[in-house]
Image 1: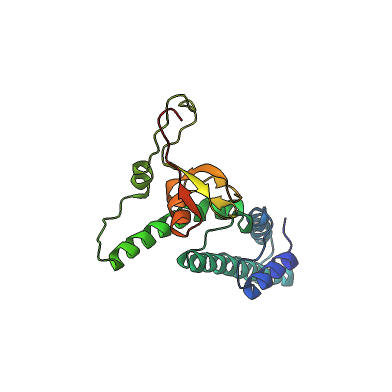
Image 2: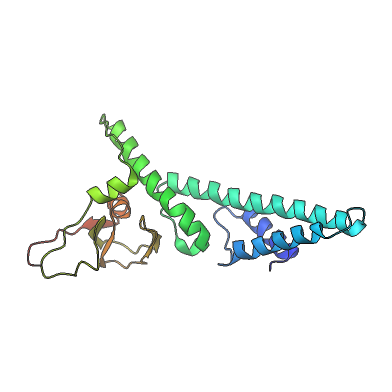
Length: 207
């Protein structure tokens, strides 16, 4: 379980960091246990006792710090995504990777829509699931079996070192080195291609 002092340290670090501060993988799990313990303590305490009032004050401070940390990190992530910067899974907790992966995909689609609009093109945005399916890469005969589905994936060649990224399929892909060839979710692949970090590799029959 996290201590009040540890949470305060994390709160200060997040407030002062320009980007995302480093959090332990089990940060939110430990925070939840701390809050649960404080609430349980209050249920069994004498509301007139000084210790109870101190616990109540501590709980209020904990809730405020946790809320601040969460929204600060979300705001920083949105700022990075708006700038076209891919998320680095190493900077996120498991819960944040699950929550923010779809957000990265959605903002990538939104950016593509805006770029087309600024060229004078109006492309009706498709739901994310449909967009992924539309980018299906056919599996050539003699390649991987149906157990290894490539629906919604693109084969790309990496042109520069790329850190690991959270894919639209909620899986971590990479990190990649220059020259690597890999199947990654179409939304992520198009984002890398647009930034000049990858090129699509066309599959040829019998390859």
